[in-house]
Image (tube, rainbow, N blue to C red; front, side):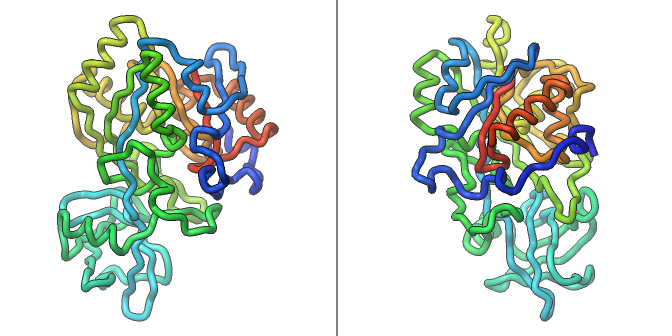
Length: 339
């Protein structure tokens, strides 16, 4: 557990459980805390005011991975199970988390429509397992979309539709949880940013499960996620850096993808692969100058990544301020930007 986790708990009233657009507001009306990474000063505003804090020539890098309904209902005999997909291994195999009655490793999990999956081994780490489905490719993805539901955790009681777990610009299916740092963007806000001369570029990193239940989180250094960065995105980021402009990541997934390429190649280049990179305060960031993100659970490894941008002391003070000012946590909650 990181040091910040020992210092505070999130009150249940601050767990955002309802999308803001279902409360009569727009997505970009969530609150925004603007954090100065050098001074630690925090300013309160709304996310729709984001253009006021960015400069012409800055580049915003967004993750356009789209959320799939990765929670499947299955069974082994009379045992009812929930299968939460975590990462696609190939056309018919997934790492997954099985929740429910005790399951048997030598027995297939049966789903609707005659779909079944054999347990063929352990996943990337315990408690994940590897499932081999009797369908593959687009046929398997179609089944997942017909039968699955969005993964939701204990603080979300209502089974909101999949659209609530999408960014407006998500276009490449593959994440099992929403790339939530981009949720507050609206098309109107994106247009306002472009009109100011702020570049918008995309990459993909398909998110895996961020929580295994029962106070278990992924091991940060053993949490593989697939990424793809195209040449157009690389060119525009490199042009910005060469021109002295800032590169601002929308989400920790974007930081992970970009810094993985920098670490592996020594330069930013078009790349795709699987990253296990764990970023903490010990890392010196090579490409990313700022970060837009939500407010993370104190136990989550995302908080360690934030310490690569701002000292732990300043981060803790900012989070205590967020608690005092009733900022909302989790994927439907408020946002912060570190500049």
